[in-house]
Structures are given as structure tokens and as C-alpha cells.
Length: 158
Image (spheres, rainbow, N blue to C red):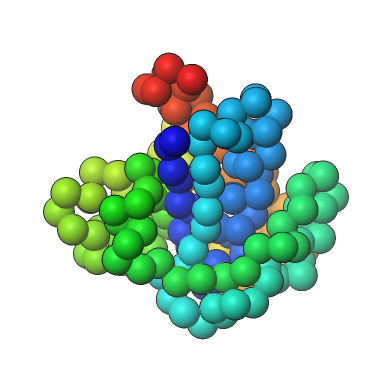
């Protein structure tokens, strides 16, 4: 099984949204038994809490249920357990690279690396904004998740 970890700062906005979107794509493609997806935060601010209500609402409008997810913090085991560790932005990417054992650093990526035509490198944090920010995050995440799925299909012959 291929394991993918989506990572943002607190694991209540961007990374659970990315987990939900990617999980839905995997199910649609019939690959949910071959690829596992999870999410976590680089910080422990919200451990045990569900995703932000605005993230849940935005995802639900697209037919994606992330209400059952609970925030957790990245730990040392994640660098061993996951084949792809996907950061939402440069700050979290830097934290992951700094914390990763040298052998795991090649598995750390930015989500928007999988949407190269987008011209952006970061999924912005919508936490302090309004509902539009959560919709924009989902737009970015959906595009990049499709690119990630294509990468997995090609690289792992799925």
C-alpha cells in the first residue's frame, strides 16, 4: 500500500481538506485499497479537534465529508510510515524537511508541486479569512490532488 500524508500547520483547515479531496479521488478511481491517505499538522494547537466548521461546510458543498477527521500532530513515526509527505506551504515544508531524517527528506513535497501549471507554490491558510478562502483552498487542492493521483498512477503503475 502507498501511504500519503497531507500536512498543514494545525490540521483543521487545509490538510484535512486535502485528505478528504484525495480520498474522494481515490474512491472514484477505485484505488482506495491501494493508496492510504491521512493528514496531520506540524503544530499541536488543535489535537483531537474536528476540522474547522468552514472547511467542513466547503467540503460538504462538494460532496466530501471530512467531519469525522480529528487533528493530530506529525510525529517521528510518520517519516517512516508514509511514502509521500505533502506540505501545504513553504513554512510547513521547511519544518518537515528540518524534522525529517535524511533518508525521508526525498519523500517530502509541496502539494502544489503536483499542479505545476498553476503558477503558485503554496496553498494559503484560510483560517483568519472568510468562506471564500476555504473555497479557494479546495480549488487548489482538487487540482493538485489530481496531479498527485496521476503521479502515483505513473510511478507505481496503478
